[in-house]
Image (cartoon, rainbow, N blue to C red; front, side, top):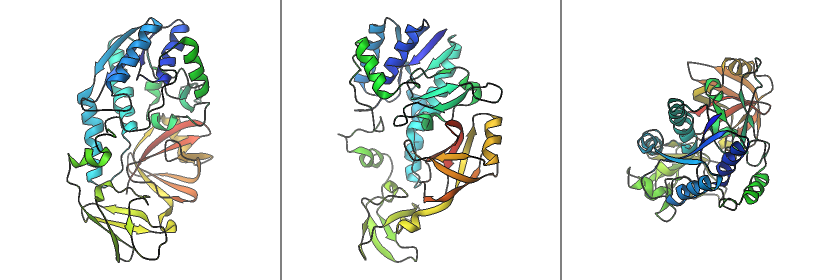
Length: 356
């Protein structure tokens, strides 16, 4: 099988390429050039591209670089800035997976005649649909499972996706990299947004060069002003840190953000809880996954990359692409712009984006 392996310069994708090459596949590594600006983390820095190339050389496989910078700006960076300007908290890694790795890259691979695309995500593709169709399943390493961030891959796409390290723990991946003598064996995992540099002032500086950041009011639910915030566009629902709230000294959290009015409503932990969320831009793995989710039997949800699994009591469909979910017990509000992913056991059914 001819496989195009997305190599980010990290240990996971390095071992993914090695596993496929050892299995006898015709492997070609590819690194995506996504961000033309400064980068000191993630898969966008010059050193990461060099690491990927050197690993490919070590494995004896061809290495390519695809420039998808325009797509990255249009589908990831641009929406990231626009969402903050609207008081929404985006997840750029999910949008990068959605538009770049499992759309633009898979289409390029098809045009070039590759049979499949592979990545180093900690998740599995298994034939567990009722007719043996492929579904995304949680990786065996619960601490590193990444099924949440690739939930948007549909059944049609899954037939051309390989996830070679999903049945390995992170420790096993690193041990295998050591055995193979890969330069990425001890490389730490990336934790940051790849196009925002720590040295360059972080998120505030990045956004401040692109949109006006305005001082905002902090008010209680009754409208009483209790403080201020330097930039209302940087506040996330659920945030506590950085909110200069006066009063009785009890913790206050951001409950809602209104950028147009430059106002953040704050409240105690109880005010931050809810028994339901509304989702938009919902994507199902396939029609059967949708049916299972709407039956609301033993369906659970996850609301962050490494969040807890939460039971649901109802999944109700509204207009096209919209969904309402009800938690079995009240949960902390999910910030608008973040994803909620639905599961049946360890199997991904689909997911959507939290809306106000």
